[in-house]
Length: 370
Image 1 (cartoon, rainbow, N blue to C red):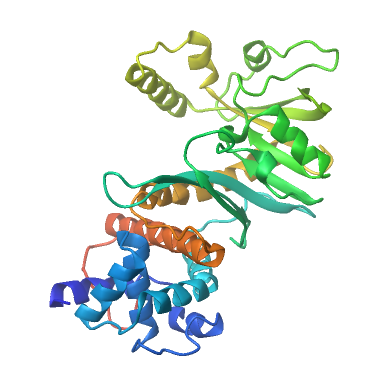
Image 2: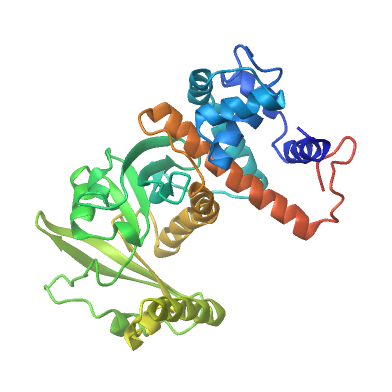
């Protein structure tokens, strides 16, 4: 490696949470350093695979030529399986440094954020895959992981594919907004806080009338104002009672949402309906948690917790297009996911320091990089 590359790597290491090397030992990632000189070299080589999209075989060759390690691709796979706990702890440390926290007390509920993302193998003709995963909050433990093809029957984001237990509280975005999925969660005595997609999840009053959203929401006239209404979702399994919780966005946030909708419609050669533009002025959530456990403001705070980590996931999703996902090994795939999140959070931290602090370009003696 050249001096500039080594200097950049040392700078990146200065952004890792304090005690990152000790965490590697405590989490069992470096029980033996056979083939590597240090935990830092192990991290560097594995991030070449995760961040640059090199195959394990190519990573091993590059590591050998650069003098970082003398290992085979099989040995790298074994190493990758063992680092998931270490990388999860690093992600937690970076999130805590950023001030991230769960927005409301979860009481006795087990908070789980579910999501799905597309990844593509390197190269113009690389195959696409969809990752379906669930992270427990605030521990970031990946407790569910599945990979499917990107297209075809049964490959979309669905709550039905998630193993749900009594006491789980699922936080999900609009991609999971379907009656069958809501019913699948309810059958397991679990609850859900779900960002509403008005056309995918029709809501009903107790007397069977369809909820007209704009008529319901228009009394919320002030930015930040929150309202809630008792509603029902109807599926083949029956009726699921819940609440529609809504927050009126600020004028600036509403205008940004409207512009995004218009650009997306224009890109697809369509015209945005006025009702869609007006609905963009609100954050709409369907929740089945009892009102005795969470008021409407707390429901919105819990969903906001999911959104806070979604900011990191947005970076993860862009980075994920570069990765070479292990497709037959769940432990390695989980480690790969934590590696992507680690890179995303490091990117956020470096961007934050570059924006808020004088760009020295190196760590001050005895202190963090600022």
